[in-house]
Image 1 (cartoon, rainbow, N blue to C red):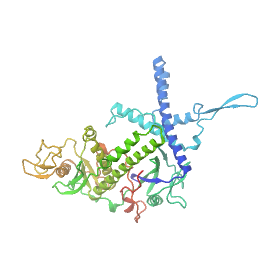
Image 2: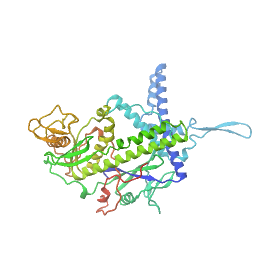
Image 3: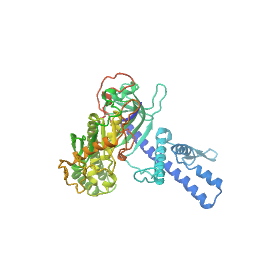
Image 4: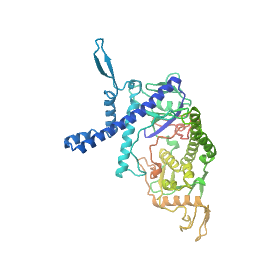
Length: 496
């Protein structure tokens, strides 16, 4: 078990199951807000003691009682949900004597305990990110303090951990005579629209183990993402091992707006060129029309809610189309090249340019880099990131002369020194490949395979967002994934 991946299915719940799912979504939001409220109340109590000049023992005890970590937040939530503050009722006897009965959170028995605990975990993660960002330990954009979640009837999600025993699992896929189903605690068996054969076969042969499941409410649809810990890909589809002193075979990947991806070798041979689909720009006219329709409806009316749902479906369709295309491009790159070089783009700085922000966001350079990075790791390939200040576009790939007056509208690179005339993007890809050969030492792991080197700040994050394609295929050993199981193209699913 060496990699994490996620299977995403569209749910087809009954009316009763929709109510139960919505109840769990609300419980997750309630647990998050309550944990944040307990944390803030404890900090306010600590500040009040300091203002009053309380003793050091009282201040230290109050400081130790502030829940910061996910475990302390879970314990604080568990204490609160059984306390009188969470719920009580008055009982009057026949003799007219009134008594108070502590009930705690009355509806906690209707909700899975994992949902409430995961809400506390999210608060702990948010607080940790805020403190690390404030102290300078966390790089990247500044992270703000966690805020309370608002109640909504159209979006939301909850997460459940998988609890296992000897021959039992709390989250099951395809049980009994319903292969297209997922069983969740407190909710039961829910029908899914896609085929679950791939995941069921991997679990049955001990090549995958369910870790958690996240249920998301979309626009008129429910989705479930099952995160599993899976075995390594089959050796047949992994890239062959290279010698430790081999510094060749690098392919530069230039990301742009005119052409989304241009891949080329050091000698200027173009291996791949993909034009950007521009999904946002294509549907911008419809998006503006739908947005105007929302603004013209009365606030709080049924027609406004319907118009907002139509606008949300359009955004979901644009997002799904872009994501599907990026998976196709990243799969084509990692399947045909074992060594890739990416640019360290300052996407945040580029997005500050109001003339380029929309086009750069539509291209999704960071998401493409993230997909290339983890998919190349799965296939035992290597990914390096060139230095951010390396002028790949302004440098001649033949003589190395830098052309400082090159502008964005110049689509052809013409060198004034050696006379080289080459496509601008292909010239940048060739420079990236040459940079990797000159600056990257050979790195191999214990198995003799190239190690993927991750350095793109836009490609950070857990490797759990790959979807699987449908199909079957033989496998050689139980501990290995079959060649068909190793595919990572995004599966076709209806837009939310």
